[in-house]
Length: 404
Image (cartoon, rainbow, N blue to C red; front, top):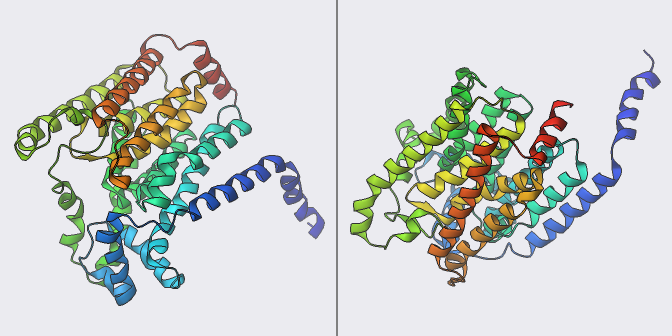
């Protein structure tokens, strides 16, 4: 085979690229970067109390800091902070700490683009979904302004969903394992995976990837010197923090009065209620006779990350972040439900106000009422699609997937 014939397939692939879409993606990315750059200097209370201290420890001690018990976050996040400190040492602390989350925003948007592209190759719809993710108010505030890490583990969750939708199951569970290695809140996605397993859509063997990935993720810190008991107990320690039914999350417990006595009284009942709701949800998915399609995967996954933080006590307002992202894909798949991502993202945006700016445009109890209304709407749609008959819009989408 001569040199010219070897280059021909590559040239054909280049010619077949949709350069107009690529140009719009590049432009949207540049604009999103510029918006985020203007927000990086903000210093939140979490930065002053936690992440600044962790980053300074890594700057001072170098890689040996990862062998110490100085942070209540899992090692993978600290590895990212170390890489930033190692290769971008001139960055000021507040900017350096936000770099991993800054990048993860675009990873989330990229996988939303890929998911929406599956809808009959709808690249313009996918382009708008990509842009919608990057201009989402809670996405911008969470990562580039607040400096939280929610976009990092959510990137793993949205990647896991996309890979399941295209039947790359091992890679999907590796992605979920990575998400779990970063944040415990990734378990909001787990009821969806369990429901698929009970329906025999996926094998139990794929779940083995989760502990394997988790162990690999803590191995460097263990080798550097952190005790294994400390590493495997991080999430248990986190679960014991914050003795409040809700930390301004717009969920069920926004309707309960604050106070230590109320917390101690209702915490066990709240956990039991959440487990019950999750089990009912899984059972409903399992008992359906409908054949699950990638569309159902999206619906079920979105509903999973929506209901778990709503019914589980001790939630923060940020814990609806996966629902914010998943709702965007949901809205682009089902245009008649366009208001769902708009409302979900606005509820999160308003719930952030109290912590970030000390203002409360709407009472948290009112935001919780809006959120439970959305849950009811999505629940009815999911139940109808699984047990009754999908509407015309859903049938058209299913036919598009069937022909691809």
